[in-house]
Length: 321
Image 1 (cartoon, rainbow, N blue to C red):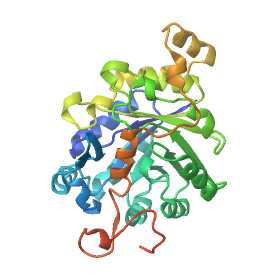
Image 2: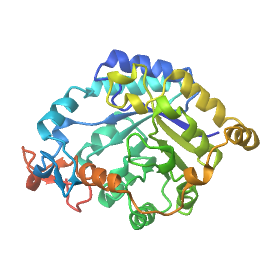
Image 3: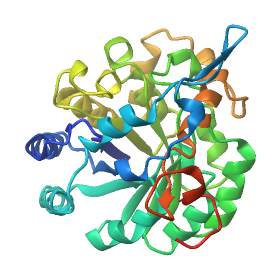
């Protein structure tokens, strides 16, 4: 049976009552894992180049994401420690494996002490090798997204983790991801480095539903991570790429079909599979590189009591926290 991760991200809007309802909703679908994100606004880094962005000769060189606006947005979405503890207990009550994403190294101990055993690493930290070393020493399992990561970085990450219990997820860090940019053949390439490989799906739900996740399962993914919501799509930042209870249940049901049944359904759709599958290795698109530039280093650990770049320790730095 595939692992199906309901990624709640911050679709709870910082409201624990909504989070509780999300857990109860996921429990009715047959999903195996449920995930939140340990994001703290105080770990956000100020980097002047993103205050206004930069366009040269009509080509965007740097995205615009002003620090103050992002800090205030993230601060409203934070969960308290006691709420996270309740989330873990509630998840286990419904036989769901509770997960979270760690975004900065100085949160590792807190996350471990809360009781998480399976941890997610976001795409932009696949190449944060020092962070991977520390996570390896503190958790039983790590699931790592590989979007906007260069092949040589993925290979090095796999060598650092060695025989540790880890999995790679293929994903494309374009939000939302068009079907023609999926490059699902990457799943096969990632199998060279770890026993289990999966797919983190960022396609537009209103247009493509759960099709990309179904294709990934049929073509060898053993793990699917999909953003999940119980709210209307315009009520959260990730709403347009988040599926609802019925769609998650359909995905679980599809994952339980045998391969012949899965391909019977896919073949009936007359898709251009060559375009969707793409190639096992590829160059990052301009948009992915822009996103990598911003999100890699978006969060860091504080060295002193301010967020200036010289006082932050980035996840890849081989410096003690």
